[in-house]
Length: 334
Image 1: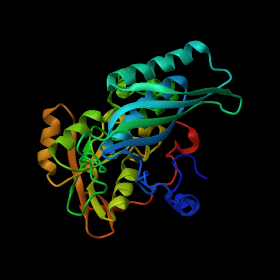
Image 2: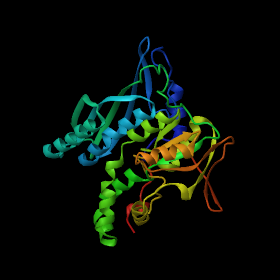
Image 3: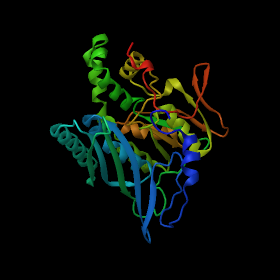
């Protein structure tokens, strides 16, 4: 199997075909692209649960854990309430760096007004990096019932595709740490520092709230699949096609420079902090987001057919299903 998120075809034949629904309080049938589960806890009360995995150094896991969980929750239409952590850490982990990781997680919880509600930590000789299983806990807004709190379950043909912030943020953030010395030697410290500071943009809470306050719309978090993978998965959820203008996809020049340096496609690396929105009123919603200081752009449209096309002037590219993690070619910077 390829490193990264499991291929959709493997999920379908080896996971979902073996799963059977038994409990009426569990409302959603698991499927590819569904990043949450909704549970009825009373006559008109519902809890939303998400599960995600982040891995890396203690510093990286600490920065990624909370936004990974919270982004999944807000894209489901839920109000985040807390997270629980299952941490597996290497033997060589030192207590000071472990303490710093938890401090970052607690600080991010405070910023999102949620609780670090508990969990489990285990030291293992079987891992070389921190593996964090993050369970997000949320509730539906009062009066929304067994829905998605104003968030649509899937996009519809004819809706505009909006993207917030920039492509490749979290992928570039991780790559900069791996290739920092070589990258700084070729470019300059200011570019590297700009990428290193992108973790401040990883949360999509504000843009999700702004979008749902404007209209009922479909939200898709790009934390795992990158822009191209997220576009494919969003279209799969709605059984639609799409077209996208490559030049309309927001991307920062610092990310372009780094991705060229390590030879990866910036549209295929994780883009935590970027959000896809399907909207009936794309231009209006973009203006709303921009008025709140959130970068956003209309990048294309969902279509009736099954073609999933990215246009670059006269060049046509057909999107393919995501297949593992985009890695530097040969693992070496150029």
